[in-house]
Each structure stands twice: as C-alpha cells, then as structure tokens.
Length: 200
Ligand SMILES: Cc1cc2nc3c(=O)[nH]c(=O)nc-3n(C[C@H](O)[C@H](O)[C@H](O)COP(=O)(O)O)c2cc1C
Image (cartoon, rainbow, N blue to C red; front, top):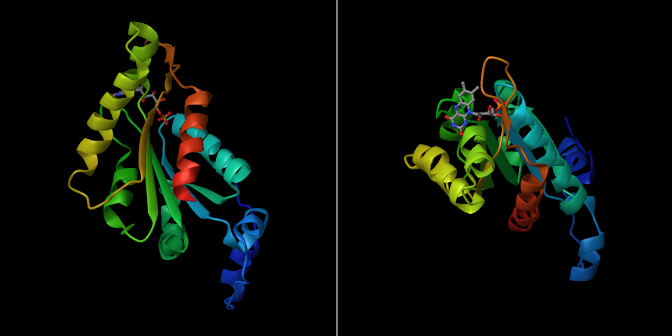
C-alpha cells in the first residue's frame, strides 16, 4: 500500500481553511504538496496480476506526477465509503476471468457517483492480450477488442464517463492450464504517462 502523507491530508485532518497565495505557473510546478492530486486506486483481482498492475500505476503517479496515491482491494472498499468524495481521481481496475469482472469491482462502479471526479478504468484481460504474443495480431486491435468487450459493454448502462480506459495483459501459471504471460510493465507505464496528464 502506498500512502504519501502531505499537507493536503493534514488539511483534512485539521479541518482548517487553506489560503492559496498568488502562485505563478512556474512556482506552482515546484510547489506545494497541498495542490497535489489525490488518487484512489481500487482493484479487483483473483490471482494478483491486477494488484501488480495497480501497484505500477500507483508508483508512476507518485513518482512522475506527484500524486498522493492510496490503493485498496475492492474487498476492503467499505472503509473508504465515507471518504470517496475526498479523492480527485478514482482509478478502478478488474481482472477478467471467463469474460467477467470481479463482481465487487463492477458493483463499486455501479454504486457510487463519480460525476465530480475523474474516473479511469483498466482491466487485466490476459488471454485477449495473449493474442498479440501468440497470433501476432496488432496490439492496438487486440486492446480495442478487449476495451469494447469488457469495458464498454459493461459500463453502457452505468452513468460514468471515464477519462481513459485501458486493457492490460495478464498471466496463467497454473500447471493444469495452458500457461502464458502477456503482462508487460511498459504497457502500463506508457498508459500512465498519458493518464497522468489527463488527471492533472
Ligand atoms: C479460468 C480463467 C478464465 C479466463 N478468462 C479470460 C477471459 O475471458 N478473457 C481474457 O482476456 N482473459 C481471461 N483469463 C486470463 C486472466 O485475465 C489472467 O489470468 C489475469 O492475469 C487474471 O488477473 P488476476 O490475477 O488479477 O485475477 C482467464 C484466466 C483464467 C484462469
């Protein structure tokens, strides 16, 4: 779990008014923790790949975009219920198994109102992304297929407008199944470099 404490969280704890001096754009860049974006990454996983992906996203947002990041397994989301509105950004990720999201992750998306926040969605669609490795189908085509099948189809009845959606690879390591590994750290890093700008 990553939790970078800063003045912003202190502000919430102390419940005091923060006065914003007249910063120039240049000084804003160097400055202050209390202007950092506050991002919650909620993930639903079965075997841990989606957590690993969430971890990379979190690290990148902290290191490259100076976000304050908290990660939570969707199983433990109850603890965050009352403070969800305090996050500027919500990123939700789910693993895809037999064409389905982790139930709680989809329930989370349906249950809460994210209209005042920036929302991003990612999935771990291991076998779909494996088509790039195994069949040599272009990655853009495969990613698009996964997004349409597993994200767009699922959210079409929910009033959410994600700023970004992405499908990542995954893995199967179990001995009685056909093994593969289509998880690539660089795919995640390159998404976060675009996402970070959309969330800033
Ligand atoms: C039983 C089973 C069914 C799967 N079904 C799909 C699927 O329908 N589509 C897909 O893209 N990947 C599928 N996968 C691959 C998973 O997305 C991959 O194993 C991923 O790493 C799981 O993420 P997790 O470890 O976060 O649960 C399946 C994997 C298993 C073991």
